[in-house]
Image 1 (cartoon, rainbow, N blue to C red):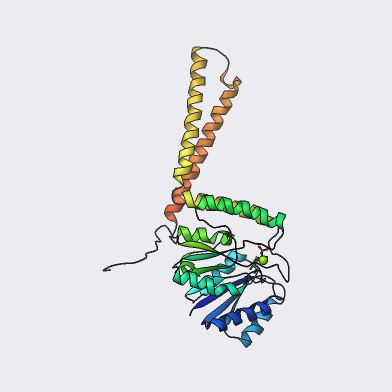
Image 2: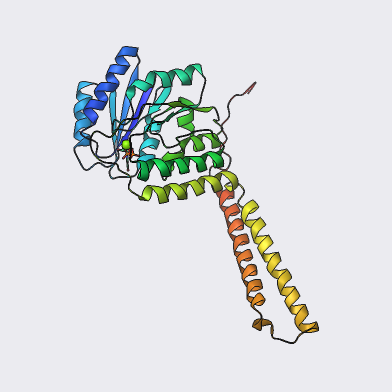
Length: 313
Ligand code: UDP
Ligand code: MG
């Protein structure tokens, strides 16, 4: 199969018929063997009925219906598990992404031998203040943390090689940073293509202002897991030890000065509380690192390596 098109959706019943008709046109024009996998992420509108109706007319269309809303990441993850195509395309259901981009994305994966080609909504049709500006900041931060040169990490329109989607697990709200997850798994041939972005025709955005808080926290997770996930002690142990030693030195100084120079009580001096504080924080950080190490030792994935090739075995 040439292509799997994975579409997560939440309450998008108005868009689906137009979207699938357009996808079908592009598929027929290019003679692709394909499947469209629609993941209904707990819609409360008519979306699932619409999907059933569409499948009755075109059996390339497949559907997965979640019992409740689990989020876009969960939807993508299920879609990735089910996908059979050689190239996997993800796109949003709201028709903000254009199916006309698909042939070029596919070509870049196959001919350019890229693991991921990510869309870049260079000209965006969203609110400038609430979306475009914050998104620029996020992308800059994600770029510098992950060292992946993308302008638009969160673009819904992306193309993947099959082995990439079969090797990564999109969880939580990590759909914003799928290229980073892929890079962690060793797929670093990542590039971008400027894609046409369109204004939302039907319905409303499914992510409110909390997108910024969650996006920020996920960025922190990306940063810490990427850098210290496999060796928490190197972060917590280091800073715990530094803090503890610092407190200990100050404490020793205070004790010595009490016995040999002035007779003011230890606890009368502000520095005393500082020293105690530093030692307690140090111990806590150290313990956090140690527990982290124990957890990662017990993680079932600790020895899951992706082997690219083997000789003579
Ligand atoms: N979506 C989803 N589950 C959710 C939220 C969104 O499957 O919990 C889908 C949504 O239906 C759309 C895509 O994710 O197909 C992108 O969402 P949206 O267009 O609302 O995001 P925006 O374009 O505003 O960033
Ligand atoms: Mg949208």
